Length: 629
Image (cartoon, rainbow, N blue to C red):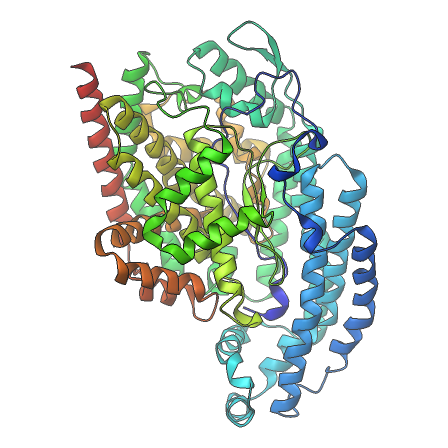
């Protein structure tokens, strides 16, 4: 992957469910200032203040010409190419820090217009930088392969970039002329605005009214509280929360459909402009993933929905309802045995579980808390979900909305998987390989979750505790594997409509989503008509690098297998896993996984994952029977 495209790379977790807010019984979600500093990240290592950020912004104006100075010169010789690559790293480091810092700061409270404006400035700056370096790939690919090989062989220091250059050469058939590349770079900022529009609507403008809690108190319905209400044992509260949230999105159904159609058309345009037949071709080829991996996933999961529907039937019986509704899908099947966990307790639970990954791994884990990597709790205006983000020179920051439940303990393990992956990569690899592709990104985090759950299941003391852990992990499994595969299925069909010249109206998108939902969940869940609009509240559909969500499913597949290997084989499997984490992007993701012990080029790992899910369902069924004795 090109050095100049590394700025915006980010590991973002799909927030499957957010449960039991720490401030659920307060009248209002707290302001950020009310949260103790020890539970907030420390961005000061990136920039001490706004003035420092502005100084770097001004510096970029002087740095960009230093890259443009190499225009027309990359083929002069190895020394010139090496100097150009090194200077691009210097400039990209500054641009990346400006972009990520502004993004993180704006995510702290999306209501602060000054921070949002700074992030917008950073996005514009990034677009300007892309325009300035638009010649780079074009000139690089114009160098005959034999000449490039000779330049690498004869220039000390250039051999480090061999894999990077190989990745660039893969894009030769899809790289345009310099003028065309510059034009696409100029268009990148406006074409990426559909995600920003959705974020503004989703995080700042939408309100969801109020509902009554278990005590009859009128409580504001927010996205962070939504999960808590869905976990309520009171079915009426679950229904009210679900309908309250979904109704807000339904009220903007046509607006959100138009925005999503614009996003899809923009991505189809970009892909066709480069010569790809479809956006899926562009997304998989650009990330060096065989298209068959995507198609195999969809086919294997569609054929493997029986265990999912059996799990949901167990939930229906456990809840004692005649028909399982969508708002029942997160209701607890058994009484929680892990609840009201403090953040400090959660830190220790996760550390204890990750012991199989070795002391060096744990040392990095504790280092993060000492150095202010973590933004733990929700506050008004804070960006939803959980994610990890940083640059080559920054801390690997992570954000979540910790609320004291088992799901939050798992989320802490997950996000730390991202951040430790980033830390190990950046402290092992040179800048050119100092990040990793999305296909690999989720594997480290999900492996952590799988190891955590295995330890907790092993230590479960009662059938009730075992049933709770199994049902909770199966929900996580369902969300990370089946649900994300269904999202990928929807996304593929939506793009196919545009590529066939059809419109993506609200009705069309609602119909696609309803059909996909039915294919995966069958008769196990009654889909209220309002459920058809769920596509409109999924932020990952509007990422700049769309066709993203399937990688959650493939990551779940790989993580399930890797965790099993680590726990059963011990040291050899652990070393393979840690080597992958330290490798960054120094090889293609499929090859890195093969070295770690997983071959994703066939459907077999997906089939094996369905079998693992089925086994967990069997175990849950047995645990529920044991509880009745």
